[in-house]
Each structure stands twice: as structure tokens, then as C-alpha cells.
Length: 379
Picture 1: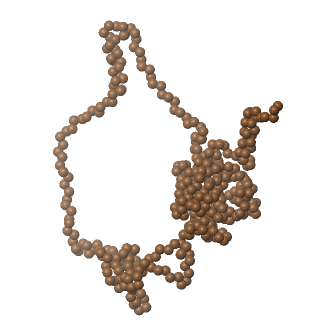
Picture 2: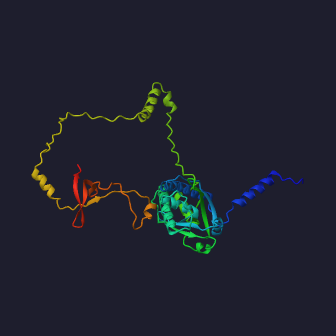
Picture 3: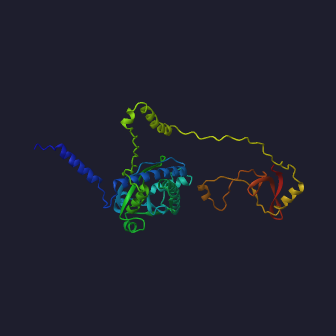
């Protein structure tokens, strides 16, 4: 031996190394078909969710193709050395199961700041109930659109419950997370790379229990599984044309007549039959006669019709002006805050009836009550 490995030995070692690398630490696994289907479902759903989140944050959101793997709670705790945010989502219609989204603390702060009208830079301080409420609403819209996309794939209505967000420190509370109602020791992990403009370049993770992942696969493939060839219909064999006896063909004057008689049914089948047209009898056609409309309406009749609705109450509203404020500015309201309206001082105010503009007027005071003097009627 010269100490050199043969090509077969190298291939064997390389294959063993790759097998060891790809082998999941979890004792439960999915088949290749189930794994591919879960990845495809997650890819379509999160693509729709990314569009929804982009509209909500007014920023470009990119979510890459998912990676499906198997993890345990201990492995997840090793990936997140800081407290992270768990968003728990339950499917309540169409499919039954739980889904958990994991977001990093910094990503939640950026998304919350963008939802509040900021530029995404306000990420100082600890996570509060405001952050959890905002990220729950964002995930509700995201996963709601994903459920709609899943409904189209499964051809049945799929609905989710409102997501609940919580801050979890996996390093300190592994046991509490493990015994919770929505996580088990061994999970299917679907991870995505998520980018939000130039603010976030991170990862978002989905966790499925194995039973839920398999049930989702069964709903997705239906009766014919992935990788199975659909049953092909048996080919229909056309009947062979009947051969004429040789004796008939050999008879003088008869062969041509018999052959033409045999070809005649085939020609009739090839040529579509024209429908038989019945002769149209002579019909006396005249234009339709309609009674003329009575253009004149009696004033008495109009008065009676109006009297029927005279006692109908209508809501009269006086609008002093309007102003547009962001959510952040509204949350800063406090007693003494002054809101500038879009009307000048002394300018006529609008009079609305059931929300429709009908007149303009000026504000007056009548015995310590405000009133409106009509100055202009809308036409």
C-alpha cells in the first residue's frame, strides 16, 4: 500500500460524511415527498405574506425560499442566545393544528416602529406590550393572507385564530416551552431569510409539530400522492373493418359495387350531417305597441308623496374642519394638545345631513348654546 486512497474509498467516505451531516438529530423524520410538499406550501404562503407585510410597513420585504429541517427545543435554544418572540397561531377551520413563528427581538422592534410611522431606527429599550400587540397584528395580517393562499391550494376554506405573541428566553425556560400546548420536543423547522429594506437582514422561523406537518401534507396531495403516477385510462381499440370475401371481389361487375357499398357508411360517418331545415311559414310581423308614459305629474300627487317622509329623522352635523395625523402623533395626544384644522378662523363651516354636504353657515351663540346660521345652500 502506498498510503493513497482509491476512488471507491474516497466516494465511500464522502458519502458517509454527507449522510452524517444530513442526518437529523431528531428521531422523527418526514419522507422526501412530505418534506418537499411542506417546503412548497411554506414558500407559497410566505410569498403572499411578504407582499402583505410590505404593504403594511410601506417598505420592500423579501422572504427567500424556505429550508426544511428537523430540530429539538435544545437546538433552537442554542440558535437564539437572547430572548425572542414566539407568535402562536392556531388553525381553526379547514385544517387542525398549531404553528409557531419565531422572530428576533430587534426585528420585532423595527417592525413595530415602522407600523407606528417611524423610520425603523427606534429600537432602544425593552420589549413592551405595545411591541407584542403590534407584532401580533402584523402576523395576523400576514398569516391571514397566507391562510387565504392555502385555501386556494387545498380548495377549501382555511382560517386561523388571532395570533398571540410572547417573549420567551429559551435558555432559561426550556422546560416551560416544551410542556406548552403548542410545542413538542421534536419539531419540523421551516426557516426563511427575511429582509426589510435596509433595516432588517435576519431570519424568520416556522415550527410545525410532526403530526401537523404530515396532516398538512395529506391535505395537500389529496388522494393521489406526490411521486405517484396518475392512473391512465385504458386505450379504446377501434374495431377493424370487415374484409369482403375474395369470391365476391372476383365476381365480374360485383366487386366495385360491393366496395362502394362498404365505403358508403364510412363516408357518411366522416361527413357531418346537415340538419333538416323546415320551411318557414309566412308570419305577419308587426312592431310592438306600448302605451305612452304620462309625462305630466300632478302637483297634488307630489305633495302627497313628500308628506309620507316628512317625519323621517335625519342627522345634521356641523364640521369645523379636518386634520390628518399619524398613529404616532395620535398616541402623543394629552390634555391640552392643540390640533390644527384645515379651515381658517372665521371661515364658514360645513353643514352635513346624513354625511352629505348640503350648506355652509357661520357659528353663533344662542342662550349659551352653539348654533349655525345658514349662509349658503348647496345646489
